[in-house]
Length: 172
Image (tube, rainbow, N blue to C red; front, side, top):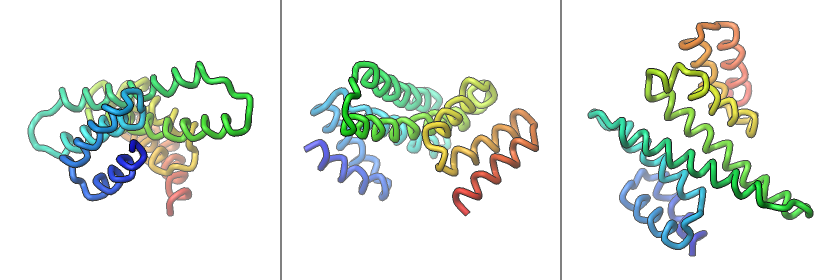
């Protein structure tokens, strides 16, 4: 049931059907309250929805960030208690880590959107995107946002150019 709902959710996300996305996420969370993926997607969709509106939505944006951080913590908790003694278990862990990079990227994007300390303090947007890049060095958007950080926040043109070049080499 959860996997079917997740499949439908991908379709709704592609079509930006926020009401259907919201309802599907509620159904998933009722079935599995510990599903980190649905928690993270709730956060990301909340960010996408409220960042597009003209009025001030700082509270909703902060809620979105907290949901994604909650999902990150759930993955980390699962990893602590998981014994890896077979190749199959290692493969399951890698799949979870693959989602973890996305969660870190989303937190970094939300922080970048928010201006002020969320954007300029290194432990906010930069650290999250760096963590994402470590977990998935093949994702170009990580390097594009790191380039923005080095260009606009740090003022280091050399690092910015290297990051932008890396992004373009990954996604020409």
